[in-house]
Length: 120
Image 1 (cartoon, rainbow, N blue to C red):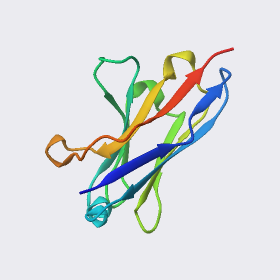
Image 2 (cartoon, rainbow, N blue to C red):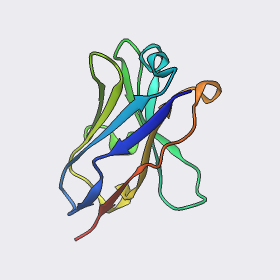
Image 3 (cartoon, one colour):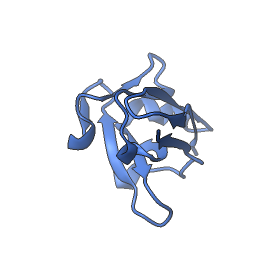
Image 4 (tube, rainbow, N blue to C red):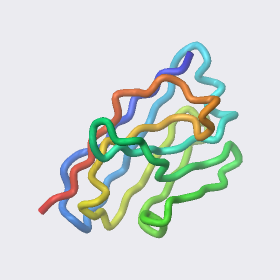
């Protein structure tokens, strides 16, 4: 089993920056280092989570068009922590952000997420 704890969200003005972190733990957390991981966001309860950014175990990254050039995904050397650096935030980036495996078949239970609110 793997558990995720996401943190680093908050209220920020348009154009501001935040850095989100996701820490993995549990009896099988070592699997995270071998898995392509992603940040997801859910903009309203009941709305589908969308992939915002993903990173392979070798470090290759991909982003949804709406965040390209503004967000950067990374993972630490021990690969137990996932990061999302968000610059030039826009109101439409407001959402609850989660981390999990990129592949549907490999996903573990969702964490509680971290809320990001972009407003003046």
